Image (tube, rainbow, N blue to C red; front, side, top):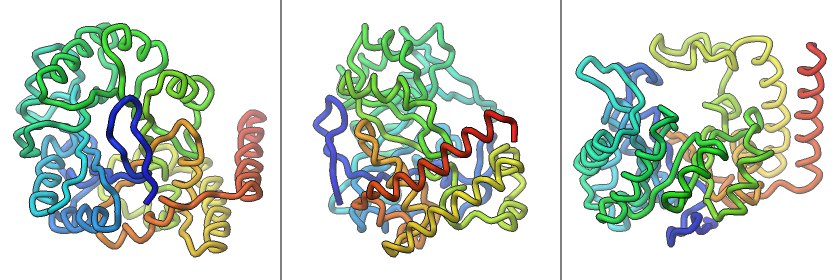
Length: 325
């Protein structure tokens, strides 16, 4: 599997990494519905066996549960993957989530993540959201301290804009940015991705399949049966008029994929990886069988004709939206 150097670090990461949001399970504000922990462990291990060498998680996923499952999945592996996690989303005893970039809060979160992950050092520790904005400088200063103390190897940000990254860089270098990026979410292309290229900030894109919408397995019937506590039920992207147009795009991706014995999802991920600023893409996995539907994107490149086909569809979609159709 292809590898790329992540920003200013010495982490040579594969183009695909395991995403563990959904394996946090039920019972909190941003859940994906019930999840079998044994399936989660098997999915992570299958992905690592298939060549992926990093896992991305966060303290808030399942209110700590995702990190615990990651620890369980890698405990018996002879070759340990890199583990990336995130802080800033804190919660109270009632499970109420809030953003905090206060130094003492980030330190508590980091130490709790170290315990749950059962590691001495986190390979990449990231600020999950730049909230509250006025505390970015305090939070990033503390992140730099955690790195100096050896609790984390490298520090990165997630969901930051260019101005927020500039503010952070005045304090300490940023190793990576984790933004949403897919055919259906391209806002980072104009300013954010060029800025990252210019400043040697690695980019690990999340939701390259737009939370499963571009996977090729999301149907109207499946959407109707999503669990009540799956946050996607209220996502406008899963409702018309957006849904109908997205399903047309998935048909195109499936058509391209069949030429190469790949899934629509693999084409969607490969499209994200085509951008020179993108170091790797996070692929969410809940069951070991899902690995087969994404792994082919790691070493696949769309040709110019296929990129033109996709661009033509996306440009038509943009024009339709602008005209109100």
